[in-house]
Amino acid sequence: MTRAGKEWEKIPETAQMTWQTYEAFQSVLEYADKLVANAGKAIGESADPGEWHENFAFEQAHRDHDQAIALKDWLHNLLSTRISFIPPRQETDIVGLGNRVTIQDEIGEPKTITLLSTFDARFGPKQYMSISNETPIGKAIMGKYIGETVTIHVTEHRQRFEHHWKILNILPGNFQAPPENLNLT
Image (tube, rainbow, N blue to C red):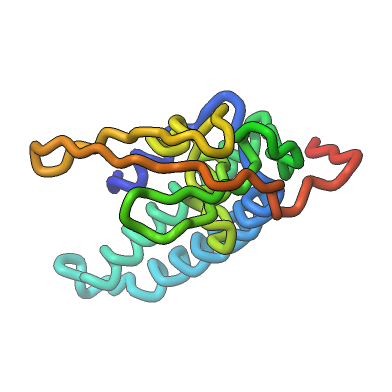
């Protein structure tokens, strides 16, 4: 299995994500179905009875097919788990999952990020400038107030650095809430 395939194996018991990320996963699952079908067709087209060895097209079609099946299986397993949808958080007194937060380090311009789950940060829509609540900065700002400064310790090339981030503003989340009366069964 590829490196990505090993990452695909990690599915939590309950997956937290926004509605948009869930919809994106549904779309990718449909696309993965097409990839499996196309790779299967390519296997049949590249199979040459006279060329039973060193048939690169045939071998590549098999690799593509295996990778598409791994993606499809991972998505199916993920979407079959219990999903906990993250609503856009409206409270702005303290940083929580679903808030937009404006932060600034000691040398940079202010940045507004959205604190979401790992699935959203890695696979969700990019327009939200989301970071995972499991990253060092995400963990550090969770539960903090406007005006507080958090310190993040980063190790790069055997050197340890400190980054200080000040929380300038806490805003409501600006992403779509899941539909009311949602039933995923």
